[in-house]
Image (cartoon, rainbow, N blue to C red; front, side, top):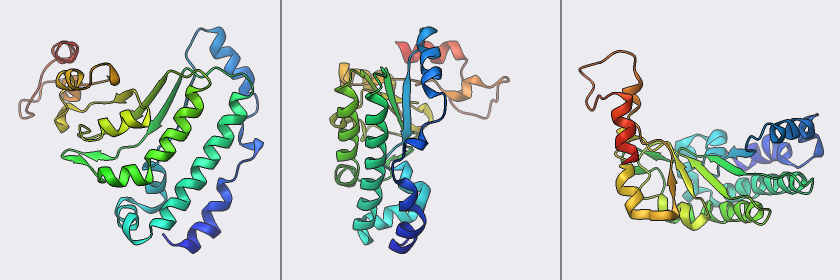
Amino acid sequence: KTWGDWEKEYKPRLQYSSDRFEKGWREQYQRIRDQGLPVTVGWKGFYWFPRDLMGDENLCADYYLQPDLVHDILNTYEHLLVATSKELLKEEVKVDSVHMSEDMCYRNGMMISPDTFCEFMLPHYKSLIDLYRNHGTKIFSVDTDGNFDQLIPLLIEAGVNVVLPCEVQAGNDIGKMRKKYGDSMAFMGGINKRSLCDKPVSLIPGRGDVQISTKQAID
């Protein structure tokens, strides 16, 4: 929450070391490849990570009250991810997809402004995505709940090409989004999760079975 907290308690823990690699990771990678399964690298996104340190309210305030602190947190985090990724990729590891967890939206839209995303997050997204794309990775996905219609163009600019879970309850219409964004973005989900309940609940609006929800998402 303060520069002192950050520099004393957290920043020293975010320095790269080869010890961060779990023992036997090469053998695990080869087992995955031998089974014909895709290899995915994932990390907390550039909203999620500082939010874990500071909380939503403090982070959203500090974009304006302590922007230098937020930038330093994100720069340090990116440097760790880049160093770790370069060490991984120089081992001739083929990464099929990269996944980033965010949750930066709620039912009415983004929890931050587009300008805030562009200033604080976009450069870090581009840096990591460019690194992996230059090593052959094709799929870059982001997980964010809520209504993300306003966020999609920003993710496309960052290089993201898959988004999920497309919460129906937040007003995401996967059919309209597919028409709007075409081949620039793929969508996973878009099924009313209430349709997965075992028993009907008549008081829940929008209730439907799995088959109907799935067909609507595909159509």
